[in-house]
Image (cartoon, rainbow, N blue to C red):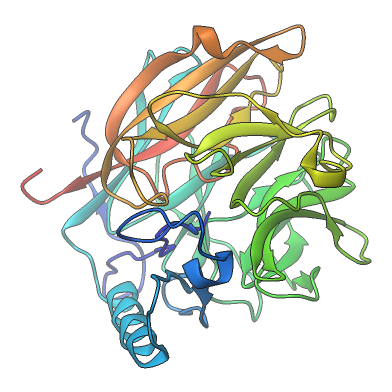
Length: 368
C-alpha cells in the first residue's frame, strides 16, 4: 500500500487506447532520508489529492522542517511523474507454484501493471493500470477493461469477494461493484481509505487509513456502517489480509523499528495493541503478507534493510512462511523468487483458489 509511495498504474497505449502487448519472454510513513522515530507520524506523511490518470495515491513522505511551499513543489513533481508515460518499464505477469517453481508467463506488457488478484473461478487475474481496472486471462491474451462507472484513479488496492460476485476498489475512497463491472457503491465515508482484504465470510473489509495523524488498520461492514479501528500504535500499519479461517489479520508494520509481519485478532489489537503478535524479525524490510486459501503458507515481500516504504523497481525477494497448527514458523522462512519489483508486485492477495499457485508481477527496465 503506501510506499515512499506513489501508487503508479501507468501503461503505454496504442492509438485505439488498448494496452500495448509485448511478446512474452521468460526472461511510510518513514522519512525519505532516515528514520525519525521521535517525530510525530503526521510529520512523516502528508496526504494530497490523487491523480486520476495514474492511480497515484498522493502519499508523500515528510521530513522534519519540510515547508508547505516545498511540499507543494514535491507534490507537483510527483503528480507529473505519475502522469508521464513509462515506455521504458515492462510488466511481466507470472504465476508460480507455491514453492516458486514452474513459472508461467501470463503476459508481458509495456508500461506498469500492478497487483494481481486471482479470480474465484481461476480463469483470470484482476490487475490495475493507468488508473483503471483490467481482467487478464490466466491462459494469456489481452487485458479487458472492467467498467467501474464514474470512479477513476483506481490504485493497486482491489480484491474479489470470497463468493466471486463483487469487487472492491480503492480510489481515495473504497467502492464495491459487481464482478462483471457496473455502477460502484461507495463504502467509506472518510478518505483516504486503502482496501486490502475481504473477511472469509465476505461480510467485512480490512483496510488501512490515516486518521488522527496516524496510519492504522480499520475494518468496515460490506453492507455499510461506521468504520472500526483495529490498531492504535504510533507505528505505521499497512497491508491487512485475513487468514482463511478468519481468526487473524496479518499485516506489516514498522512499530518495532523495522518493517515486519505482524498479526492481530479480527476484532482488533485491544488496548495498547496488546494482542498484536510479531511474526518476522530479521534483517529485511517485510511487506504485504498474504495467507494461502488452504492456510498452509504466507507469502510476502522482502526489501533490503533500510529501504524506505515499498518503492517500485527494487531488487526484492518473495518469501514464504509455513503455517503449522495455525502458527507461522518464521524460523523456516524460504526465499522462493528474486526479481526487480516492489510496489505493484503483490500488494493484494494473489493466490489461486486451490492454493496450488500464486501470481505476481516483476518488472524490467530498458537496459536491465
